[in-house]
Image (cartoon, rainbow, N blue to C red; front, side, top):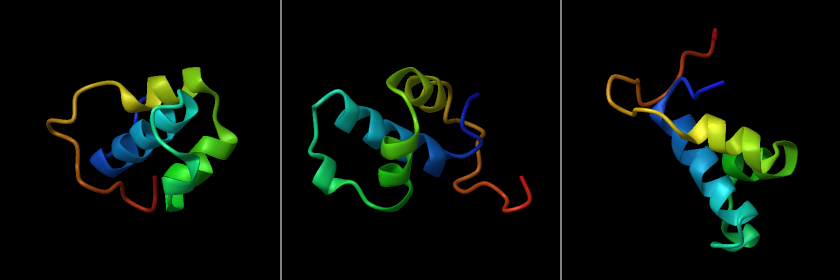
Length: 63
């Protein structure tokens, strides 16, 4: 399931980086920390990949 906004992609990318050991888990905040705790590396990769162009900065709260 791809991200619906640029913010979701960025958070998933940060969590994925921590899962892979490229960044410290202690550096994560907010959504990226929640994603790190609740999603697998494969799920994060699917969420983070894809085009950013044409996506809103933030997703609607209704979605």
